[in-house]
Image (cartoon, rainbow, N blue to C red; front, side, top):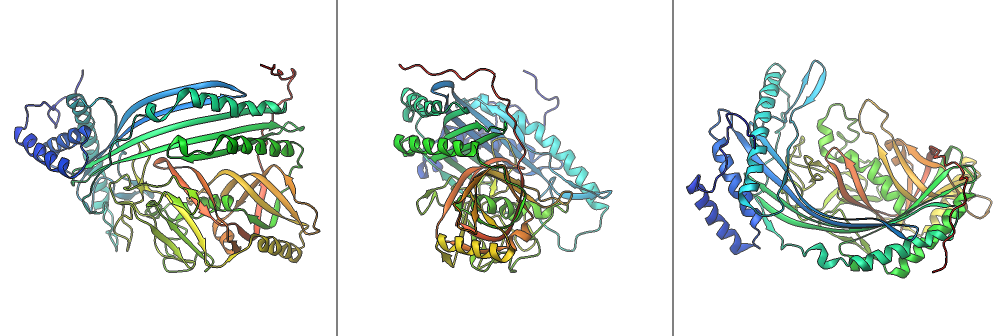
Length: 579
């Protein structure tokens, strides 16, 4: 085994730093009397004390160190057209480490501008794969090697940003680089093993049964059903004294199917379910019924007309409006973006000003796992910087009140509000959690349809659009590209002024720019829907939910969806034989 030459940190051995170990053991005894015991916590705490004591002797010592360890166990099963095509089971531990050199006011993450190019300090995080057994020596060695290299990188980074900052004018309102937050101790009991809650044979049978339903239509070219159970136990230990251990159990059942239209266009549809344990997923009858409805919709989409680009009135049904708010609003109130001069900073100067209709309230609440009858997956007790989660009201009666914050301060918002988040191996930044949009003036859904038809008549439109289902979307917030959004609907209907029955169409993307779109929101229904998914951004993919009512919008814009062409098959699909 090779080690860095002239290490700043000595190798960890059980007999070194006896006094430190005795202190750590005493702290361990006290902690055990207050919260559930976990051997890995004690290993992490002991090695952190040892490393910080040695690093304090460096000419420019770090002022902060944290370990973020994710112990993840998962099982997954995927079926296609009645057969199991993939089955996996795994467990691993991944370390993410941060070392900050300097102090809370100025450290190696400090943003500087050199020759007109904005440069954000910080060289990322240290990563390592840890043993899944609680072997103190093996784990400590991995921590030591990671800290040794990460500190050296951080020291060089600190010198570089310090040198640049000293040549530049001092800002009129300087911001700290890292906020001081309360010290927390929170340790949840360990989860049971996945094997104790997952019945392999039972779920294999279910997946085969569900996916076999797609054999009923010869034009369906993809019919997959996948089950994934993930148990994450997340450890956060910092040199400030915070210790947080929390569980994130998640079960996802995903249904994905595609059909080929007569013109060769490949049309996908999907359904997803989320729960915290397998027994909370919908019944077999419910899943089978949903698959049959999905198949029927695919059959209709196969012969549905292609939509032309459109600008005019529309209704966004609840699930669609949740994705709409997540993409075009949620990303623009993530606080870390507002420190980047090359971000569009749509709402940076809009605090205490109207940004939405006065009938709308928007909050982010990671403290709750449900809203009315909806289960939410953007929930956590503490964020990935060890800060206690809390509900944050971002918009009240249309007025912008604050932003989502990590430990990277903004002007007039010096502290985190529990939204520093990251996936395994990434560095936390401010991210969304459970987005909840509510209206103070709810209307019946049928009233929205009447408003749509009236507005179509006013604008001289033959029809308006109803967006029922979506699979996601994306947005851009920087200054180098148009600040636009693109949402991907999968089930879209024309609502005709003449009273003609609603018409299913295909090939539609919902596009636009945020401020223009917000100005067109006219009314909200008394319903609510939830979109469960994962949001990808700078700190990786994190689980999020978006709850919102259906919305009537006076004017939206669509464009044609990129065509996914599938050649007609030369051979007919095999016909299943009766068993």
